[in-house]
Amino acid sequence: MQHSLSITVGRQDAQINGSDDRALQAGVDYLAALGGGTLKILPGEYHLNNAIYLRSQIRIEGSGAETILIKNPSVRTNLAVDSDWYDADVTLADRDGFAVGYGVCLKARNPHHGARDIIKRTIVGCDGDHFWLDRPLDNNFWADHEAQISTLFPILTGEHIHDVEIHNLVLDGNRPNNEHLDGNYAGCIFLQNCERIGIDNVEARNYNGDGISWQICHDVTVTNCRSLNNADLGLHPGSGSQRPTMRDNHLEGNRLGLFFCWGVKHGVAENNRMLNNRDFGISVGHRDTDNIIRSNRIEGSGKVGVLFRDEPNEGRCPHRNLVENNDIVNSGSDGKGTGIDIQGQTRSITIRRNRITETRGAAEYVGVRIGHKTADVVLEENGFSGLALDVEDLRSRQT
Image (cartoon, rainbow, N blue to C red; front, side, top):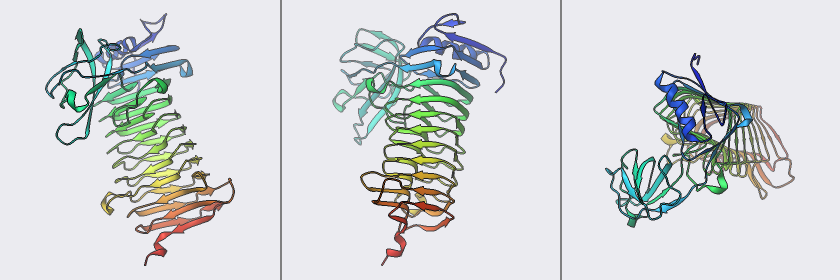
């Protein structure tokens, strides 16, 4: 994007001075009111009590490793009084740690089917232990159904926006001091129903959830980023996202490096490094079709390097994906693991010119495992080294 308008935010000597979410949000909103522009965040640490809500046509430009946005520690309390779906107010059992302007997450057990309802809001007013929110609740949050409120939120977030760029900064989720919130709701970056988003040279670290998550977002590009030591997923192209591009990123120390969620199609994951992720390097599943996984280094995955997940039926499986020219090294632990594991009724997977290597000595390590219900799996010119079994084709064991 090319914009003529820009504004600086910094701890001092900026056009907007401040060190928290209010200063940063003021800069975003000022630019948005004038049609867009670049928010330049000067060096320093910025401690957040709420997410920065992005707007369309905004470019966020930090000062590299010297610009650090840190989520403040979370607090939690129960709701003292029932609130219904049409209410925009809640009564807290303990108001300590909550204030006007804070981002909050409400959770409760649904009174009709027992599943957990989760929503995010901002506190806009209070009187004693009574707090008003920026929007109605949309679900019932009843005190006798484990209704709780916590100061949990993404660091950068946007919904129904387009043409946004995020560059050159560090996002720190302060994981030891924050409760868990999964990547369907939050992360260092969380986007929902967005289009044409570019994220480059961003470090997303230490979030008690995902590093970078986008749900039903199209044409998202993530390049030269680092997603490190997050509780869940390093990169999470989420449900229904079309044409994601993930290139030249470093994903390390997460539970899972790159997770293709539901219905992610025509994506490219190329030249990424995925190291020491606790479960899987890459996971592909429910209706994730026509994706390219190429020229990545996937090393030290706790269970499997590249997993094609088992799904209940053929229509939900991840068909027509290409895995090409990857280095997959030391997958699994405790003597067991698999480089590439193709499960369920998955069809039309091409595994070409990959190098699958085990350097830890003799054990039950497998290069490629082909599930007994799969079909049209093509193996071409792959190299194997140090494995107990290069290819385990379970289709040959059917009776």
